[in-house]
Image (cartoon, rainbow, N blue to C red):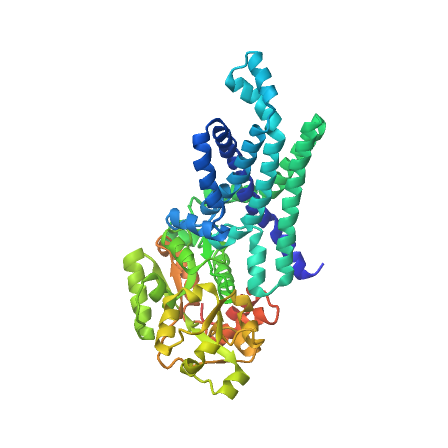
Length: 531
């Protein structure tokens, strides 16, 4: 087995456990809600119409959008809760619908016979109607199970680990083996759960109770195997906390540091957005946390506003953001200012408004950069963004969906007269290849991205300074900022890396097959400082 494939299998228990801990409770609670709701719809025509309309409309909301809505409804909370609620909502429709169909399909003669022998309505429902409708209801549960297991892969962007971690990180790293592994793992889990439930269904119809119990035991075993790593890890963390006498968020006094490891087995949650540089920086932070005795937990592939809100609410402890993003997206400032002034202004506003501490810049700036093929730049005389203005109506620009929704893009379009350019949204994984192949004419890339050199692309100058400065800054949540051992562990990262360092690290991952952790270790060892 190759080392890369071995790594994927090593990650499987934790990610499978995360997936099952989301999907199974969502399906279970969905059954508890949906079956009574279906019964109510059958018994009351006045209830059936509004209920079916609402749950059918909710089902039309794209799943990734529903996850984002749940984060907003919960006040920016990320992780398990928004993902669980979204999956629960998605499980309801097929179970309610099949409950209604099953009960409506009960032979009227059977109902009449139940009434004739003196059964009360509740007895008739429990002893006649539900048993007869059970196979149809169980079919709805099977459908809900397949839906929920598949949709659970989308929980990764809101900070809930799942098998989707393979898919999202694989897309970003262009590691198709990782993507395929995640897809196969998810499909296998869906099929196994579906077939076990189907076996229970057919065995109940044939009254083969031994098979029913065997299939039920199989379900229980699968759940135990999937959830055991998480349960054991939680227990171990609890004992570690009891042994040290410290909670995760408590600060350690100078005297205690002399007696205990600096982070004393504290869990430190590291947030990240969904591109290569963020994966590398996450590993860089994780290595510093481990070196200080802490236990890093990575929460990756999150959008800018989601990860920032999580930091402000102390559900993420630390992550790296960029001053231009914070200035425009978080602080809602329409006009950029000078680079040094922006660093100071952003740090002050974040602390005053949110209690967030900007520990410092990592030393490099990763600004947005419009890139074109180098030979096209030469043949068309494209040196600055302004040179695109007379050609705007003929051009297509590729960029990630977040970019096209940002105020910086609106400013670029206004200052350079690019309103006629056609926007093509895509994941940043495919953006550089698309412009290199001519599928788009321009791409909204990142100045530290190693694929600019790898694909022989040219960066267009920005004479109007439409894009604000984008210094990479290390941010700490209000609670984490009080954790002095954590601050001490992360401080050596400040002002340590250059643009060239970061571009080389990004290229090693995107083009040379280096893992983000290996790139982080090389980045650290290649920039020694006095510890």
